[in-house]
Image 1 (cartoon, rainbow, N blue to C red):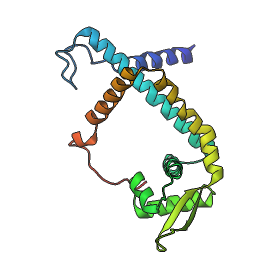
Image 2: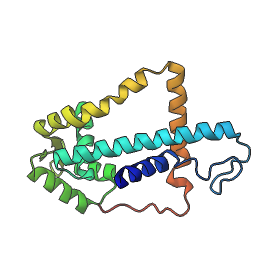
Image 3: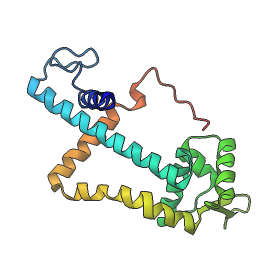
Length: 196
């Protein structure tokens, strides 16, 4: 009984994440003084939908990492390599470091681990004999596509169900929201490189 009550309470809190403190005229984080109560309810529903999307993505990411026995950073590197291969691009360790925002030393450790576990191969660069080319192995690429890739690709169906105007509105909204929460707007956030 206690577990069910706890789960119900957790669900109520989750559903109200963006309603608390978002009553018209009462937020201490944003100026909502000119926003009607009906719009506040719609905004709360929209923000909760975004929270559910983030949660679904987090759960999918965790399940895929567990299935493939990889870290989040490993998965990001492999995803980058798969996309690059699809586009016919050559990938170097420096490109992976830049994409993951990690140091050269951290990149070397990551690549050593992925190569040891047969997820990637390294070979000499065809035009620069001082550099290496990094490629995902066919087995890892197939495994990623058949599991995580197939599940992630299902987002296409949600986008396809929208009209052209709806897609434009959603794209505008997501682009605008990304800009609003960008770290370039946060004086407190540094722009340091992660040493993952």
